[in-house]
Image 1 (cartoon, rainbow, N blue to C red):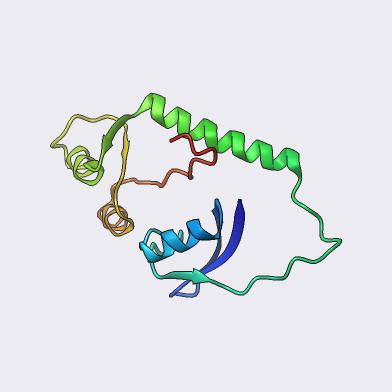
Image 2 (image 1 turned 180 degrees about the horizontal axis):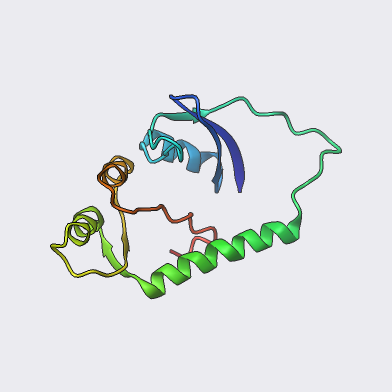
Length: 135
């Protein structure tokens, strides 16, 4: 895993975790990155402090706990919600506006579509990435 300091076009700074630098490049070129503050997809790497010897390394136990948490969260959602695939935005709107069966759902959508849903008042959240590559 690699952590990058990121900045959106509105100057919000945040961190992003990626499997490797190629994963960052793929997501950035595909418009798949999103600022957690303003939801813009115009995101780039910001200046990062160089790695210095003697700097405390991440605690292996905390890293393991974070991985377990993310894995558990994804598993919980997968076990307690209906997967609707690419129809996520459409199904979420139907549920929100009372035109669909109320239930918990998850699936795929674009960053722009997720931002549109949030602007409409639909509660949406991105799942953290599958750190183990299983799903």
